[in-house]
Length: 296
Image (cartoon, rainbow, N blue to C red; front, side):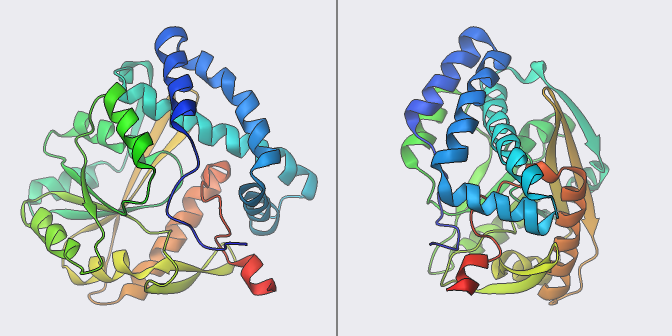
């Protein structure tokens, strides 16, 4: 069984077309109704994902086996809602949702200083709608998302054709490390550069640290760069609270120069803190802790 993230998310263009049709013609709640069937399907036919989320619920959160099984369904349902919400907000239905800002003054401060800043998030909640929060706060908040090009290209192209084109700039990770020059360029322009710190590719450099009581691997790049570039660092999460309400958290981090491990420790504590508030919004549906690998 594959124990590391394979660099792409599950889904088809047809699935997205159906959701977009429901959102535009029947509303967001009608699109949610589809999730009752979709979440049920994934519980039984996405074996690797289901096994991974059961481990998280049972072994890392300490839920009973029965509670873990019941919450597998709730986890898939919540994840589906975040996908629908992203499509709805991108389609011009932003005013159908309410937003709460917690610590956003930390991001505004970065913009005021004009030195740029690094945002580090995780695959929890719905960070992909953060740009809509930040646009409302300050029009200067240009985000550059450092990512791979491994997502399904046909899904990306379809979403771009039916939704408002995102203002996020993408910096693709390159084997020759040329993306580092793009990151430096964005920071020198006073822009924000965002990383997700919780997924790495097998064969790339990583750091190990404990998360929720068990050691896991994290991509070294975000923490090495953030600890060396001498720019402010903020941990940012956008969490779903009710069907139509989101809460953005932004916390400034005190970074020790050239101490990537110290930054990683602070990051894992931060992720544990946010999961303590929103335990069902952990959306890493793979063997994150390498549990199956250790049994081989």
